[in-house]
Each structure stands twice: as structure tokens, then as C-alpha cells.
Image (cartoon, rainbow, N blue to C red; front, side, top):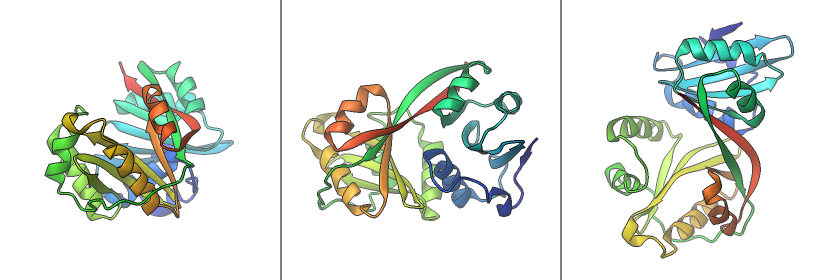
Length: 238
């Protein structure tokens, strides 16, 4: 049975560690349980539990034990998902049950030597967006509303260096996730993104630092000292 979470205690069995679990916690800390566009679900099965965080049509799935992925697939179809982020095992099984396209992504953990640099710790969001839109197809209003909300609640932050930017999406239970790494075209190839990532990894030295990337960026992150820790799946509705 899968039900909507109404109290924080219902999330007590959410795994303490893992990219999927921390993504759900970041949403929970940012938005709480009072919104319909951001809500949470728990599924209790004979051998385990499943936890789902939803922001609009995007879901994150975290498993604790063995779950009934057939029931989860029915629920996700009924809920009208647009995207699902989940573990490799769940992704493979759900891909066979859902009308979706799949993307295999790499979860990379920093294992190198970080070097601190003098970077901007509170860049204006409008400036950040100006850089990001040169690399990503993102709409200003939903991006701004989500990121400004997460920043106000102390979940996310941006860092910048010479027209390079990145987001610290969250740093929870000693696991930090970097994302939205971008540099303006005219400043690419000058090492600014590398220095920025190194500086942020130095700043977060008390945590394990992760990025999620496609295969095309594997070598870039390997040169920076990241190593693949696991594989995850993103599923997109057809």
C-alpha cells in the first residue's frame, strides 16, 4: 500500500545515507508537508519500504529493503510522472513496466586532493542564471522559485568564480551533492570550473562530495579526482 505522508514520523525509516534518500530529505526540509505540488509518499511492503518525494511531476525513489516495483509502477503511472530518479536496480525494473525513456547516469564521489581558492560564496541568482542558461535548457521562473526557496531554508547554495558557477544542492548527513556546473562560452577552457569545483570540495571537506553526470563527462570529473561510486537511473515519460 502506498500512501501520502502526513507527518514527519512516517519518514523515520528513510535510509540515512544515499543520493536518493538525501534528495528526498532536501525536498522535505525545503518544502515540508503543506504543499500539494511537493509531497511525499511511503509504500510498505512485506520485505521493505519505498519512499517517494515529488516536486511537480518529478519523483525521487528511495528503497529500504525489497519493494513491490510493480505496485510502484502502477502508482507512478496513475500519478502522472514526468521524471523518476532512482537506483540502478529499481530503474531497470521500472523501465520494463512504465511508458518511459531511460538514462543511465554516474554517481561520482570526490576522492582527490582539494585546493582552496578565493571564490564568490553568495552570487546573485540572476547572475547565476545568466551563466546557467548558456549550458542548460532551463526556464527562469520555476528555476528561480525552487532555488531561492531552497537557499532561504538553508538547503542549497551557489558558488561562483570568473563566470563559472555551481550549486551545492544539499549537504545532509555528511553527503553533499554538487550540480548545475556551468561556465560561459567565452571563459571555457581556462580552468575556472576546475578551480571552482576544487574550492567547493575543500569547503565541504568534512562531507563526502558527489556529482551526478552522464558518460560524456566521466573523464572530466575523473581528472578532477572523482571516482564512480554507483550508477543511477533517470526515467522520462514518453
